[in-house]
Length: 263
Image 1: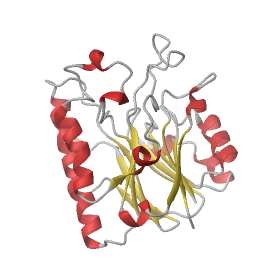
Image 2: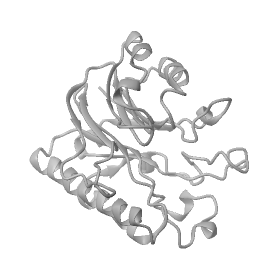
Image 3: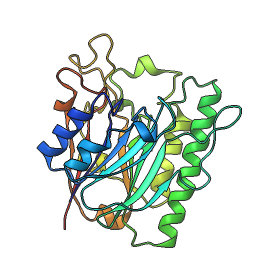
Image 4: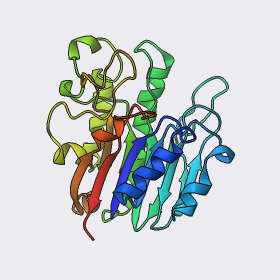
């Protein structure tokens, strides 16, 4: 089975490109982030015609997550337990959706950006990650044999080599010690970040800004990851970062990260 994660930066804008990629790669399950639409606006029909079921969570033109699966979608869960709200009044944003697909519990996650270290959004980001880690630890504690994938755009660059020029990120979000500690906490909870384990090379980015020729210069960031439980980690044969999907007209600023599973 092949599962993947991809921040598409607007599902309506990139529906054709998403569909072509799914058909070309034979991906069975796709965790999608930044769909940027309400539930009633998501382009369900072309994916359903191609054999994919769709679970989507979106409130407006911001955020939004989805799971597309041609191996079934069961037990859909919108938001994880105790997912924090943001704003005044507080809103639980559409940043997390989970479903069981072909026996694997897949979570599509769009971690808050954080904006600036002194911004309220940064504190929200840290709380969001802490609550997710608590939920993830509980899932594994309840069933040590569970096959769970926490996939998505984490908006954290865990290593200095995950940004094209570390000196440009000093004092900024994505690379702060608190964010990196929050990301690393999933290892302490018993999960393995499988994409790093199988693709350890430096300069293997998953995101390039649209501005200043960042992609042609390979001035990117590695911020899209998949944390897996031990039972699922044992099934992962291969991980691919599909850099070519950043090329051409109408590309997202992120690329798919693909996990191939045995069995």
